[in-house]
Image 1 (cartoon, rainbow, N blue to C red):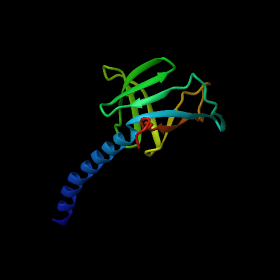
Image 2: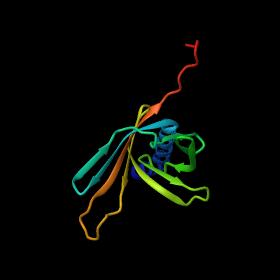
Image 3: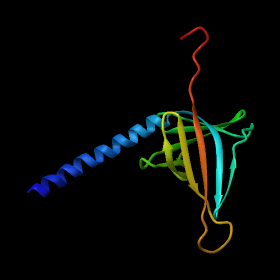
Amino acid sequence: MAMLKFRILLTVILPVLVLASCDTRERELTGVWRTDSISNFVNGFSFTNNTFDEHWSTFEYDADGMMTERKKEKFKTYRYQLPTADSLVYTDSTGHRLSGFQIVKLTDEHLILKKAQKPYLPGKNQELYEVRFFTKIHAKPAAGSQ
């Protein structure tokens, strides 16, 4: 009997906790993020690009599941989803998956995303991935306000 109560409790509480976790992650993700650096790892070798230039994008996530990538005067809009607490998926307007990332870290200030890459050469035992580091851009107060 105790085991049955435990299972019922688990089937009720676990989904609530998962949903609450995703909701919190969406709130933390909402806002504008600036790319700080991008690291590429290829079979034990790595290269980090942390030299900001005009070709780097900012990413604006809204609470309605839309993300706008801005680069100079151009922009693209995608849908985003957080299917689990540690994954971020971009889709097109029809729901077709475009890209997916593992969320390594998400706080109110920092976002770190990891994406597996396809091997360059045929064969096994290849590890390729990219890690992107972002800082949240907070709105500046209007002149004269505090």
